[in-house]
Image (cartoon, rainbow, N blue to C red):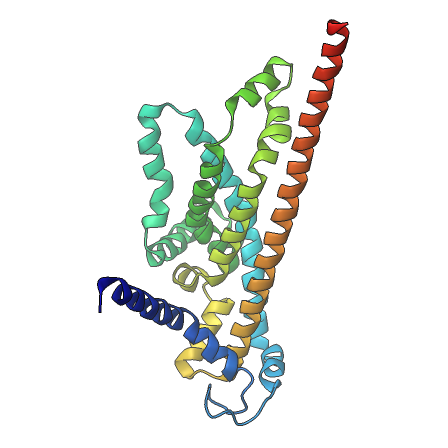
Length: 295
C-alpha cells in the first residue's frame, strides 16, 4: 500500500474517531432522554417516552437553579461587555511601550484558576461589607456576578479588540474635523462598527457564565445555580432527567446559532446592497458632472 492511500485511510479513521469522541456523548444523552429505563440507557430501547421532560419541568430545584443561572448570566453580560469594551478602547489609546504591561494585567484573570477567583471574591467582599456596613451586598448572586465578570470581561475585551484593530481611524478624524463631538463619534461611528463584536462578546459572556462551575460553587454561598444542582445530582447517580435537560440545551444552542447565522447573512447582504447603491450613485454623479464639461 502506497503512502497516498494509507494517509487517506488514516485521515478517515481520525475523522471518524474525532466525531465519535465529540458527538458520541451527545448521541447517548439524546437517545436516553427518550428511552423508558430509569437509568440512562441507549440499548436496548425499551420504549419511547416524554416523561423525563415533564419530570424535568416539575423539578423545583432544577428550575430554580435554571432561573438563577439565567439571571446571573444576564447580569454578567451587562457588566462584562461594557468593561471589555472600555478595556479594548484603552488598549488602542495608550502608548505602545506600556501596552504589553496593560495587556498582561487585564488578561491575568483568564489565567487565574476559577477556584482562586471564587474564594478570593468571597473573602474580600466578606471583609469589605463588614467594614463598610453594607452587609446586604454579601449575597451569593452578587458575589457570583462579580467573580464571573472579573475574568469573563477579559474574554469580551479580546473579542472586541480583534474587531477594533480593523477600525479605520480616518473615519473618526473626519467626523471630528466636521464638528462632531467624541460622544457622537462613539455612538454613530464606533458602536455600529463594533456591533458584531459586541453581540459575539455578549453571547460568549452569557454562555461562559451559564456553564461556569469552579468560580460559582464558591461564590454562590448557600444559593444554587443550575451547574451546582447538576453537580449534586450527578454525585447521587445520573438519571434521564439530566439527559432531557441536555437535549433542550443543545436544541436551543443549535437554533440560536442558526438564527444568528441567518441574521448575519441578511445584514451582510443589506450592507452589500447599500454599498453598491452608494457606488452607483457616485458613478451617476460623476457621469452627470462629466457631460456638461464635455459639452
